[in-house]
Every structure is written in structure tokens, then in C-alpha cells.
Length: 319
Image 1 (cartoon, rainbow, N blue to C red):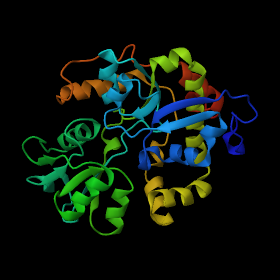
Image 2 (image 1 turned 45 degrees about the vertical axis):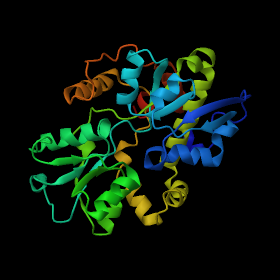
Image 3 (image 1 turned 30 degrees about the horizontal axis):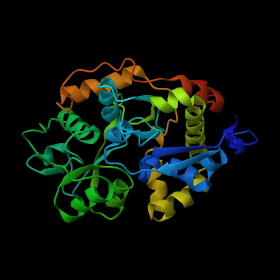
Image 4 (image 1 turned 180 degrees about the horizontal axis):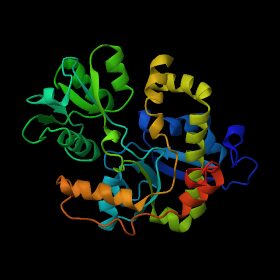
């Protein structure tokens, strides 16, 4: 499959029509997948999606309300270990944390953060854990030297930064770029440079879908990763759409997206060791009470097939 040709693998194939309920990320976290949805690629592949915005994806899976979703493995893996009938079936398009730490212009270094309020996104989870680990690596005790404030994500987090409720915050793009361009803040850290083995993005499917319609799981991953690789390799087409989607001018959208292109790996195949590092860190920071083994929590069957078909990850031509 040559993605550069722009001919998707589902074209000309007899695709069985299916209806699925999906919990997919929006914003920068889900941007190329939203591009695929907007272009009708899932529909073209015979997949009719019903979307749910769920605060608690684990409960939704447990209630049988979701078939497939993306998100933080730190949310899903403990649930799997505790009996929720789901499995990790692939990485997301990027699996390292695309988080930034921004601060007021007068804060030039981590040392300047002492005594300040820092937005931590949520009380628990991948973002506050990442913040605490990066602070620790830079000589700041997150429990003693600063005050952590759960301030939400995306626009909510940026609003607390703009208003001065917090002096610094962990945040996603495009808000780091927006802060710099407006002169309201500067970047202290790209967190993935401090935590290259910490995994933040996976796709999860219900065991019912895996067992009863395995071909459909594979087809969803096929559309998902085709779309992400297409967007990455067709930026002149993708960026104008992305700017409108993010409600930004095209220059700002390009800067924000290109600033994270290093993370745009499009490798479907899950690395067990990285998952384990993630679980161990969550335990270390008290966000998971028990030590958890990731054995049996993921199934790379579908990711392997899709990676091979689309020539991604270890199957790329230059590998």
C-alpha cells in the first residue's frame, strides 16, 4: 500500500456495513482522525460511527456503551486488570506525551517556579504525573516547592493561565504556540524530552468487538492509521483544514503541528516495555495503589496486520 498515491486500501473492496460507537479524541490529540471523519473515510470503508463524549470511558465500556476508543493507557490498563472486558489493540498515532509546560514571561527557568501555582490539568492521570516527574527531574519538589492546581485541559487550562490563576501550566498544543505568539508566556519544557519512555496514547476495543467482529477492529485501525499517515505526508492539503478545525490562522496551526512532528510516529504496534514503564510511574507517584503487570492487557494482532499493510513502524521501506 503506497499512501502517497492517495488510494486507500478499502477502495474497491467489499466492506461489510457495520455500526460502531466510538469515543475518539478531539483537538490536536485527535486531529488527523477527525480529518478522516470529515472526509468520510470511515463511511467509505463501511464503518458508520456513533460518537460519545464520555468523561469516564471505563464505565462506558463496562456498561457496553462503547465499542472502541482512544486515550491514556494509565486509565485503561488498571481497568483491564480489574476485569473490564476491553483490550489495548494499538498505539495512537503518537504515543509519547505531547505536553508542554508554559510559564509567564518573567519565569525563565524551573528554579523560578518555586512558590508558584502550576496548572496540573487533572488531580490524577498522565498529565499531572508528567508534570511532577519533569519538575522532579529539574530540581523542583512538586509537593513542597509549588502549588499544583487542577485546571482542566485545552481551552480551560489556557484560560486559567491567561487570567493569572496559575503562573505556569502543563498544556497541549496549539496553546503553547498561542502563548508564545501573543507574548503571554514562554515554553519551559517539551515534556517528552524528559520522559521518552512514558506512553500516553492507545486505542482500546471491547472484547465483544474483538471476539465477534475482529475484521472490523482491523478495519478501524486501517482507516485511523491511513488517515494519520496521509495527513502527515500531505501537509499542504491537511494544514488548511486543520487551521479551520482548530479555529486558528494557518501560520499558527502550521507552527503548532510542525512543533510536534517528531512525535507523529504512526506506529500501531504496542511496546510492552513502554506500557510497563507507564504503569510503574503511576504506582511510584501514588496514582495507582498496586503494582500492575501489563501482561495480557494488549493484543497486537490487528496492529501488526495494519502496520504491514500500510508499511508503518518496523515495516517502513527504509527500516
